[in-house]
Image (tube, rainbow, N blue to C red; front, side):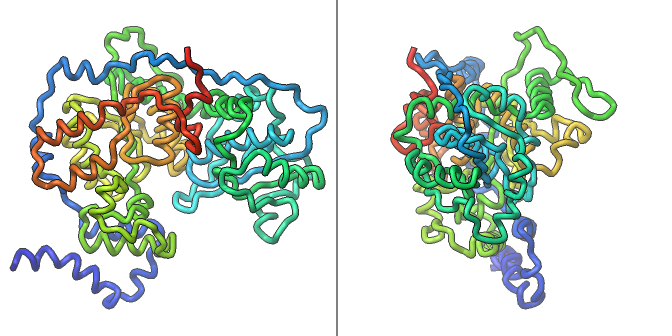
Length: 507
């Protein structure tokens, strides 16, 4: 009884806080729920499995097999579009306003190029909205090499960095203050090419400009001419490259993961000069990138229970109310239902157990790709115990080297994307935009990418009496064909997640 009382005190205190301190909850900002939960940090939920995983041994032969690259699957990149002659006269200027994170913006850019081609319009470099969660104001030119982007697509469409003076009035602020004839707000999700010809082309012809907002996911994946599909592929895989300082930092991090004893020369300003050149490829170490999609936004939206008790539940409920007015579809299901259906993101502890069960031992080098983990270092500590050679941007790069990306969620994500694309193996803790973009890009390059079987993992973690051998066998069997094998895109599926056959040709 005494233990139960002690264990319940944090939760009781949390419930009494609104009465004792009426202004406390009302003063919470977007970041506050995660800080609120720190009052009651969750403990490991799978102690028995964790104990066995920490004692695991892996043979050298098994480790060698894990790192084997994917066999040739008979598909090749095939994105070279056949540019038709650019129209003598453009129909007008096309603006798009993109929201979401880095990868959602990336897909929106590809779609914007395709829509501009369909309309014979001149594309204005897309405008990025400020992300309401991360408060990142990074622009297209802050993230992507705009000159490279324009040059690669110069034979496909006309692109300008800014509007001419006669249209300088067409700004985001202009459209925010009133209904405007040049703004299209009604573009449906996955609109057809004909929808744009019927609804946007007349606006272009009448005013010389059209602004589409919102724009995310506003172009269909089906029933488009092959040259338009190939153009989207060309944008995604060739035209969109990160700015030089992102690539330089990414190369440095990859080099430090492969050659831990080697450094990278840094000039006095802290900017990376270049990564030390290494010629002995036999000494290169292999590494896994884990995208740990476990921020407060994801945790709250999932409506799952992550072991933080009443404090966690109250904090996440408060966050859902602040961000979505409490309207989260998953809230109608119990935690058991959500987990058995694979709807709960894997925690750092759970992704660690999955990777360990696949056969990776504690000598495996991991790179942790994530922005802010809900629960902080306490949440990550179990994963770090399983894989002590785990690194991230902060551990691999100096504060001076990180100056240009500090506090900018999109640039931080860009570095993680770059390192993920150059890793031997990529694993995401749950489906999402980063997972989808990386899966598609690595499929295009025929690189190993492990897709967690979310329903299987949810069911295994619900079984509190499962032994480590049974858990490991189930994990291995459940991931035999989830290593990056080609999966042909089905109707309505994203071309950016499943690039074959639209972006690839059978050899």
